Amino acid sequence: MTQEELQIISNRDAHWDEVINLCRKYGFITQEYGNAVTLMTNSYQIDSWQEPTYRFRQEQLFGSFPQPEETSGKK
Image 1 (cartoon, rainbow, N blue to C red):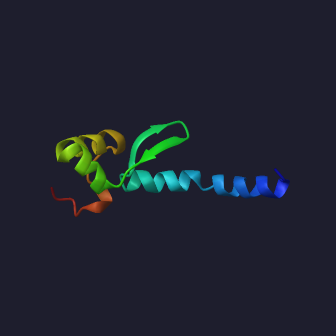
Image 2 (cartoon, one colour):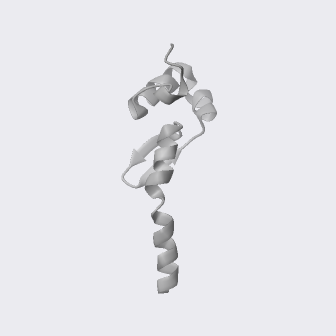
Image 3 (spheres, rainbow, N blue to C red):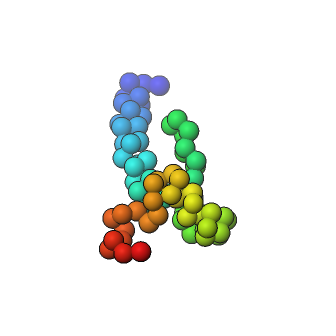
């Protein structure tokens, strides 16, 4: 690879944390290991695992469901 191509790749990789933080914020990550993640839409997660398991996994992976900024503070 040329230096220019390596720089393009490096510029892309510089956005990794930003992308992963957005995926965490919106609950798309279903598995995470090192720099590898598995993503699924929330609706597909609910269809695949049903609502109780979906809620449990969201709480385990992200600390809460829904995320604090997604509600008015009322249950």
